[in-house]
Image (tube, rainbow over all chains, first blue to last red; front, side, top):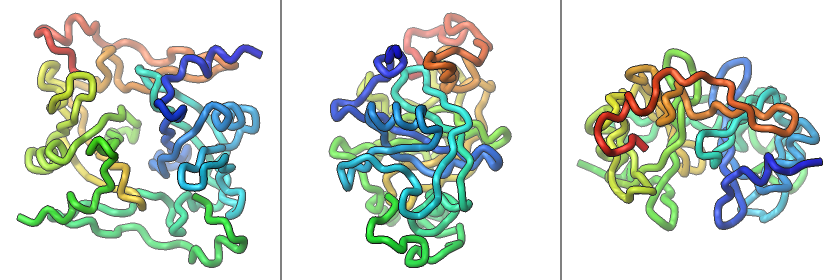
Length: 134
Length: 134
């Protein structure tokens, strides 16, 4: 199988590419994470988002501990081929490890970052196992 | 004026933060670029996106040469405070330097990146001056 499409990505010096996950039904930007070559290959093969966790330095099948997997509906790359945009179905309606729908819950209001999105589920209830989904 | 909100951003080692520009009226992700501290401050002060051009190593008031400015409608930061999401009004309806509406015009189709968005305006007509808007 040709891997030309993977070769075309302009990976960072660390071999990563930033990925935006956007929810298909709401068009909300859910989160940004990173993929390495294997994560991107697996994402396409499995049809679910697999990221590279920079903090844990390992592959991270999003939702592996929380159940909040992201089913891939569409994949784009930008003009410079250095940012990927995933259109996903967000299982459980929660993308953020804080238990919110998405990670962009701080809004700038008069020079302050104010939380404007509710916590839908207590992270303690989301992560029954040890590993945080991040 | 307090700059606490700027101090809270988790800047990269290079003093930058990635910024997603999303179009307010369509919810389309237009582009991703970078800001340094001054760019972010100016963006808020002026109400229009000001990025840091990594290729030109200078502040880049988006649309300065093309007229395709981005009027800021909302600003968010994510849970880790290391990615910014701008909701913008895209003047001229063209965000990409290739003359397309947005930069995410390559779609993955059977392991190939295929262009799926039309060029709305020839870049030669957009950039009458020397500096490319990028």
